[in-house]
Length: 301
Image (tube, rainbow, N blue to C red):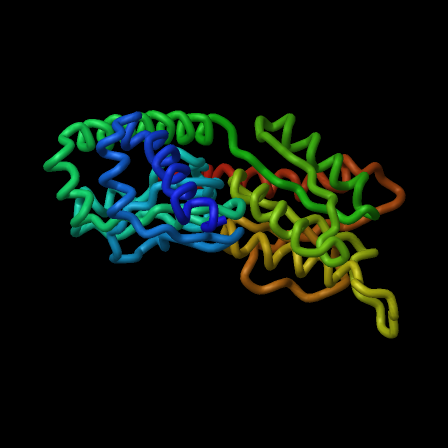
């Protein structure tokens, strides 16, 4: 992709892309100055240009592609071509990076040092106004996001195909209690990396994840089938832990099969063919509701 911005034709492409930046807003002189000041970098999917807690202070102008912004592992924003990231550390040199910025697709960024940004701002004072306006817009976006997150707690329920009926009962019961519930039944182990990425993205938008495991999910000795259902459960739990943390992942498992899983919240339920699922799952649903209410929605600040 960098080839599109090299040579005479590439220079014209770069000037056009820079003039479209919110930091530039059509100022051709500023675009020319930036073109001579930036370093172009290519970022593949999943590559981070900024790491939360970092002490660097470069600004990145997104030339092509797009990026996801994560705070404490939770996706909080999406930035696309024409926007910039990293300006807070440039404006306030003593501030560490407050978020991780990861390429959501193959992308090209123009890296600009904080010192050079300051020099350009002396020549083009409107840069400061453009940065301030963009920060204000993002603050309003964040406030809207936090407000909606606090209104209703969002829960992701994962279940194997064999546990579909129980998962639907759990989903309906929690929804009736005022929670926003989404059901996930896409397998991971056979589906490859794309399913894992989709689960990560989905989990980043919720407050809690519940993994429902029944008696059929326990691995049986000598079972040649792979992946065993239990392996699938463990894989899902591992992905969720990386996004939400242990106190936000609940494993709801039937009595009598396997030992409790360390690092997550464990709940038990007792399958009983003589009773309807709503009755059987009521105690587990009650405990889930109380736990969710005690923890509250995920902090997005």
